[in-house]
Image 1 (cartoon, rainbow, N blue to C red):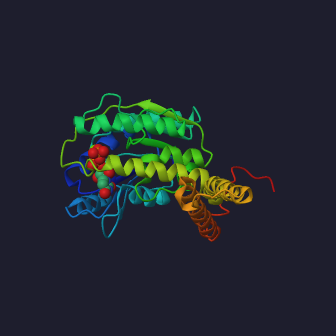
Image 2: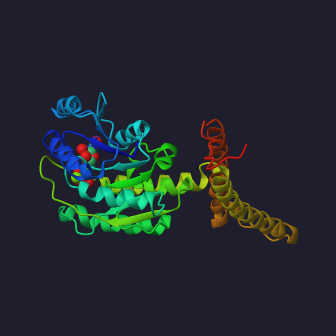
Image 3: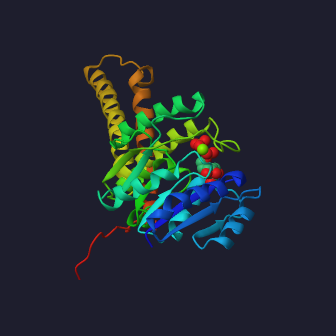
Length: 316
Ligand code: UDP
Ligand code: MG
């Protein structure tokens, strides 16, 4: 199969029929073998009935329905598992992403050899409360990840099949798919300016709280990439440093006291010195960090992921 289009949807009954008709119109002249996988993320409206109706009439339509709303990442995850095409496209169901972009995206994957091509909504039709935080968000992610994309969270993306079969999107990590792909060794990541429309029907499913969640997730993603498999290097490193500071303070304090005693001068109380508190707090925190490191090692040791590597090619 040439192409799989994965469409996560949550209460988009008015949009999906129109979206599928548009996809058909664009792909018809190309004569590709393709499938459109609608993943109903626990909609409470008639979306699933619409998907059923379309599936009866068109063999290209596939559908998966969650029993409840799990979120966009979960929907993408099961869509990726089901996808059979050599190229996989994801797009939002709300008609904000244009199917006209599909042929060019597929060409970039197939002919230019990209692992992943992300859409860039250069001219965006969203409210200001969404576009401004988004600029800040993208700048931060660019800085942290070193991936030169302008629009990490764009719903319209294209992937080589290998990528979607080897990465795992969970929680709300759909914002960071390019990072997750890069962590897994898919380094050729490109970008294409795409058309964007105003939402035609329904309402946005994400509120302003997405900004905070997004930044917290960024911390997790970077932490897990760097230290997920060797947490002791972080906690142990920090713990050693802080313990050392406390230890030096304690030695200094003890030495000071002994010197006074040795010289027969009346020594001040150890508890009067600020170093006493510094050494106490530092040594406790340092030990705690060490313990956190050991616990994290135990956890990562029992993770089924601990020896999961992607073998790109084989000669056996
Ligand atoms: N979506 C989903 N599950 C959710 C929230 C959203 O599958 O819990 C889908 C939604 O139906 C749409 C896409 O994710 O197809 C993007 O959502 P939305 O258009 O609300 O996001 P925005 O355009 O505001 O970023
Ligand atoms: Mg939208």
